[in-house]
Image (cartoon, rainbow, N blue to C red; front, side):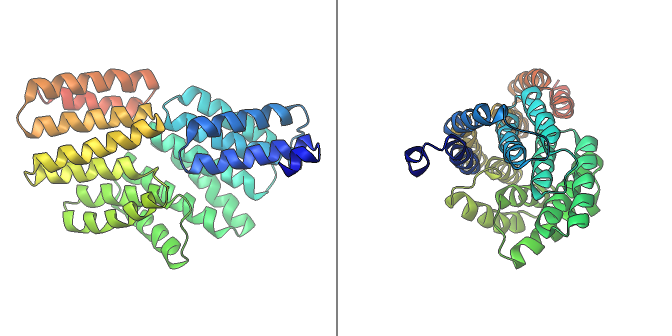
Length: 306
């Protein structure tokens, strides 16, 4: 209101962009996209690579890219990151690393582990050059997740734990639900359900604060843990909660990940035909989104039910 009263169009756009970035963090995507698109349209004609206007627009584009990636529109997401990186240029401004941090997250969501690892290592290098400790921890966690998922490398999982430990020591809470979700996944895969539930408490604490990006992943992992323990009713409740957070964000990719998880729960109940059909449907949807690694996983699940 103050900016509008002053007739300062550039400041109005900046306020819109900042509010859009905040709403992105809360996964209020429709409002966030409208605000960020307004700001980008206003600023686009005035941005020169490396300028303050360009740097601000680059972070807005990175936030927009994260929203599009979470929703499974990976082509549009990567286009936003390409434009953001063009605006940043070769500056060492902290925003350059913020762009890389969001880009690597979208690549991880898409299951492009090797590409994600390359971008994470680029972020590590930039963080070390600029002595930026938080981006370094974020990049380290992302690189660890890429190694763990892409190669089954236990050292990668330990890398996530170390990065999260560093954040906790410094009371960092910036998007940490993502990393807590990864840790819950890992502990379930390691067949450590009690430790997974303790880790899930930290995930739920972040969710109560309004930060829910890692919540569906954690819920899926807990559903698989409940299923392995024979508590199928609890597993279905966990998955219903994962669906709720995915629907809130209109996250197409999360909904399909939930669908594949549901196929795994059906398989555990020996409901092979239903599990096969659901896994095949998930495979087709993964392929449409360009989530090729996940499509292979769903295809293997479907084949196992024949």
